[in-house]
Image (cartoon, rainbow over all chains, first blue to last red; front, top):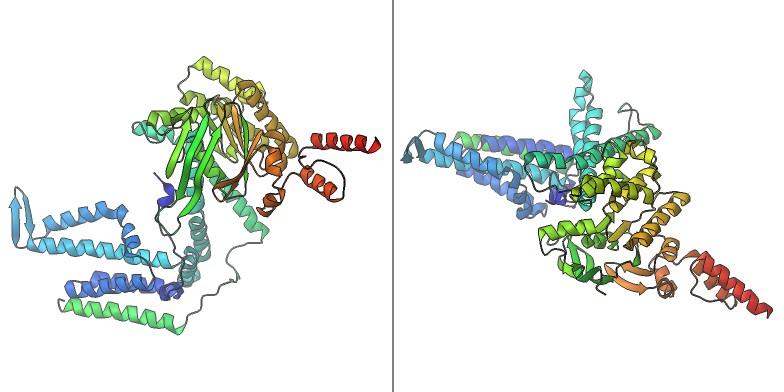
Length: 268
Length: 287
């Protein structure tokens, strides 16, 4: 097991059109895309959605292989969804054995469902691959700021999120290091039954928790030393500013959702 | 005599096949004799840590071989595990790996994993504690109630308790005060002497390695440009300086003295040698 290979919300720095877009517009644009994806109903609309995804990939210089690699953890879910849809859609029966019947509609339905989930995940990955986690939390904070009026601690939530994101790589590295150190003392994390494996984790988890708490305390002290006192009146180094291209992008995405909705209504 | 540890054309490439590909070791040939005291110096990222993790089978070579007692450590799964007990590795800041309720239990973790019986584990724990200067009272305390320096000693004892034939330490004195550092180095020397174990010390400090080691290896970008006795290595003073490593303070002082026209030897690297050399030079001047 190599912990360094995990690509969860990984960011690939770059300078493409998608990288430079305002993160708020990217988030809203993605939302519009996902809505359109659920409206899409038949080959034509799905083809349009797929073409757009491929275009995004090409513009952002993300290799399709990298994007598809992110699907690995959900392969089981995809197969499961596909099979369920295949058997449980009523229609013209094609094959039938025992209590199972595969229908023509079922196969189509399963195909669309699987493609839909794949595109949904790929589109979301495209966002996290081209947007730094910090920009993403800034965008969330900015988009949710109207909620401050009803006393939702938006800034604090965004801060918690960015700190959590910031420490994921650190904790992974730390886990790797402690695992190595305990292996050097003969710890065995890979063999034995479930209970033995769980017991073997104690030498890993105790130091990891202690170090996480220590880090949290140090971070809190460091923030206090710099007079951090929450979001009230706080200015930022990088202000998010919308440019015309950001607005055009959003308008295009909303138009896409509407168009897909109309096309799907005509059964395309 | 067969070397206790040997590497043959050892190469390690991180993240092979991705844009982040990076060769940390490039064809390293190394051999360590039983009972030798070896030091490895090099800047951060020069491949030192990668190398030592190969020596006890925590990392698998991309190509090349690691031999322990003349046999490949990857020949079987059981062999790799056995080698980990024979080649003790103390990581950087090892105090962060402590996890047990008492110091005693933590030191016993390694020997217990070896499958030793209770009396043997007890003997080893007490002996390891003695090596690093921990009192019997400390053994019953929680490791988390100790000071940083004491925690470090508990962690080192945890590796020593496995009585490895080769003890590898990655910057054991980093972050310790001078007294703590001197004591830690003294503990390592004692283990080296009493158990006739080979020691591999990884360090940034030229003064430290000059005093402690019989042989030095200089690392740069995954290769070993210089190796030999401290005298031989420090004769490349200018090159070491260029690599950002420098030479021990005493060697610098003597280089300046020579530049000022005094007749003193160039290969001086400890205070004791410096004292003798100066006394000799004064005697020569009087005569």
